[in-house]
Length: 182
Image (cartoon, rainbow, N blue to C red; front, top):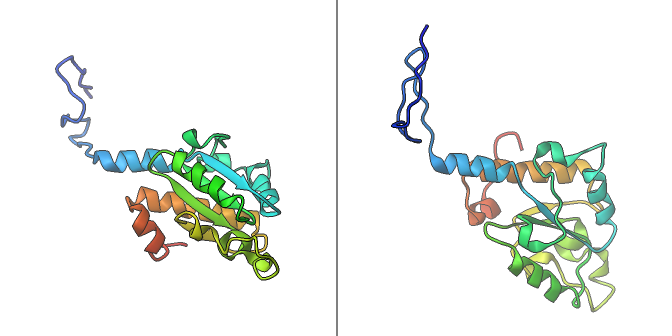
């Protein structure tokens, strides 16, 4: 059994024989999508009760860090995904848009709960509630519920990861049917 010693003439991406005669090939896009999907940094935009469920997902029982959402950011410039958890009022809509614009591409948006998706029960009783986050910014994933269970948010985050790993664009993520197992 012999092992090839790498030399200075070996370059990354060059086909190199391995023990047993096999070779390893990969597309750079696949590696980038895998890395991007396993290091999503969320920015929380929690304005009401769904924020409590988000905190539960970040806590010890559900621990979303084991799935690659380790670093919850307090600044949009370091975040990859914004999780909108709660009611959006007319006064907060420009703030949400500004945060979204400050995020670097590629960026993803999750609307969590009835209020973030459609304005919830508050839309019909007041003039100041926006009828869903998609009236302000484009939304990639919707998490239904009032409030949704922590498992539902975890499922949405993992589904987003799978779609990123599959190499889907943001438009494809928004319109694609669920992947196998969703």
